[in-house]
Image 1 (cartoon, helix red, strand yellow):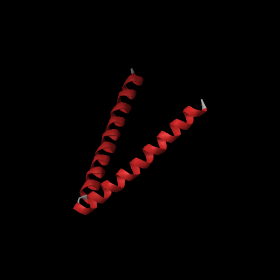
Image 2 (cartoon, rainbow, N blue to C red):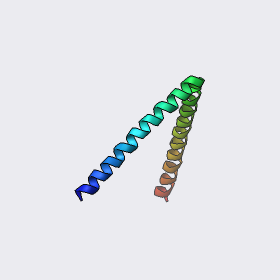
Image 3 (tube, rainbow, N blue to C red):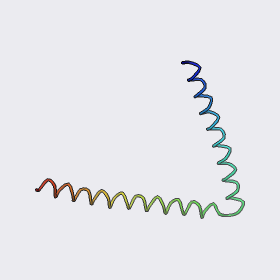
Length: 71
């Protein structure tokens, strides 16, 4: 059992290290091409759209719950 935990820990550490290295490479690429602001802008726009969608969905569900409670 202990060897499984050690193996999982080692695998997760390896994945984390490779992810960090990949992010540095991606950041350097976007900075060198001048597209970092574009990527950040797209991420922010998608995040705002997701938040608006969730707020609208919550309002619709609240309305439906009120209708069900009234009946």
